Length: 198
Length: 198
DNA sequence: GTCTATAGGTTGATAGAC
DNA sequence: GTCTATCAACCTATAGAC
Image 1 (cartoon, rainbow over the protein chains, first blue to last red):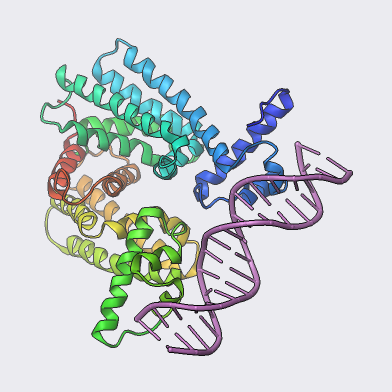
Image 2 (image 1 turned 90 degrees about the vertical axis):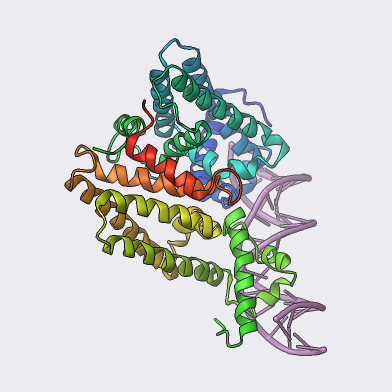
């Protein structure tokens, strides 16, 4: 793991990671070869190893950087003194913002976290998963307790419903095409809270 | 593509396809090797080619067989004279039944259809995708027209919401553990129609 | 920072014996 | 219906020249 010292090295590194992230997101981690990445970067595969230890190091850096940012935002919501409904809405919107700003990272996490999590070095993925569950369950329970959510909800099932509904949008949402991520978040929140019935 | 003539050949073929389906579902089509399949079946990789032309033939047979059954059920719902709300509910329930009865096939379709669809031989996957969209959009539009659904719904977004919400459950639902698929369908339908607000 | 060259392993698939 | 044996292509990663 070479330490970037100059500005050029840091930007080149970042550039290569962005290229890798796009390929990992499009084809999956295991189906993206180091040659794919090198080709897209206009260099040969061996040259990549001047910047990174291995293919795993690349996806590691991509995912851990992203998750640090995302969970910082969740923590801020949990710590706020908004009412439960507002917190839940904010959490949904933060997730759609992540899809807008980091679509590749979200896609990689959705598609490859289960596989990567089987390796020791990616143990933090499981921790983050548990942490995410804790965030949503806390918000749902607070909502039920304060009377803004139905009291007959199955909390675990509701958690899965919200989690899946939000993140799966990364499969079809394309920044700049069709509805904006804020419009989509509005409508998702509306369906989630009030349903589609007349 | 060897034609099965005897009963033994047909069952052996089915047995091998079941083994392949589980591996494709667990690890993805591209990350499952013919050796993985042969190992799980207790034979050597070369022997698989006595039964199938290629790895692609296997996944082709798995997916096309499943989709024929599934879309037969959708057609029956569309053709019925139930009201729009009942049809929508039935379509959701049929999808959860498919997850219960054919979890591997559903998972393969969810994870690998985009990739497989890029090959000519799997062109039918795109047709089926368009057909599925047509089914849901028809039901939603009928619901709006007959006044059982909100008339301010974005039909396309609602279609995606329902489709994603239903099928993504294949990621965590395990037959025989926790809630039954009918219980889950009940709660999903309830959230979808009425939301989670108190 | 990139290239040349290559090691060592895995891949899907085939030919022919049993 | 399965095995033995194998091929050509592809994989991640390394060593050292430029």
